[in-house]
Length: 192
Image 1 (tube, rainbow, N blue to C red):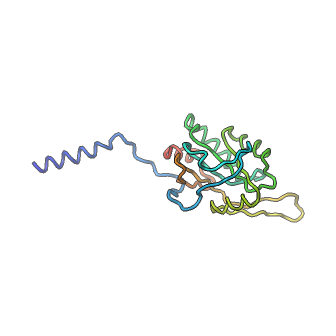
Image 2 (image 1 turned 180 degrees about the vertical axis):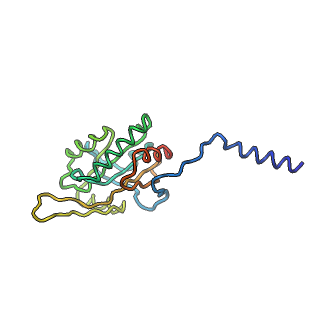
């Protein structure tokens, strides 16, 4: 009799989770519970002060870069735009945020043209030099201006990953540079 009850209990408990799909492992790095990347206080490309809490209720993807970047930044932004297309209607639950590391050149007007050119829902954020440095430090983002003799302008060496927050504002995933749009979309669906 005890064996029959035991078998029935095991079958009952295993059936409780039968309707749930098994979780696919994340492609990006799971950084749930990280003790950094907590917040920012910067202006958006519309001139409004923004903080992470302004985006509660949405999955947030946060990327640091600059508009004069020759390769990493436009590639990352294009990949994010492709991931949004792959998400279809679910893309409306995602907020992609681009934080500039080049406050000298990336003014509100420049960001207002550059960032939405990838997707009209994307937001660009900026601050002065001190605010930029503090925000980068909070997110453990490396950046350094590189001026070459004989050339006009400069480039900025910088970290190239993206942070992903769930709808409650908790940091969850770190995407390394070069993450494919289908991988980004898959990971975003899992935490939505």
